Image 1 (cartoon, rainbow, N blue to C red):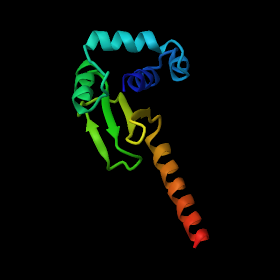
Image 2: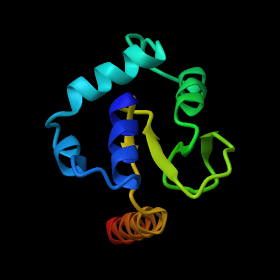
Image 3: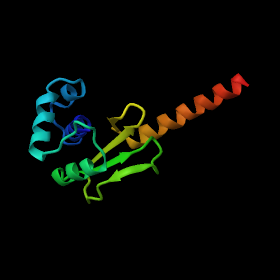
Length: 125
């Protein structure tokens, strides 16, 4: 969760380290510092209470977490009025958060995947 938030914040904020963070370089000290500063313990994972705490810390960003690529499936919405928005998707199978760089792109990708699955199912019949 913290890892994804750092990557998303660096993307939205235009941080020159964005690509390094995304590739896993330089990010560990930043995540450790964030967790120390906020006092959040993610040793047992993170959920809505931790997201609420992160939202308090990142007041200039609106954090939105989706339960899938369906835009109606919102797990958390920080409800902050801000043009700076951090969009994450939660992968329940792997218990992992992923950054959504483009909601439109994510939606189109899910529609494409759904179409491919339908075509595959028709071909299997």
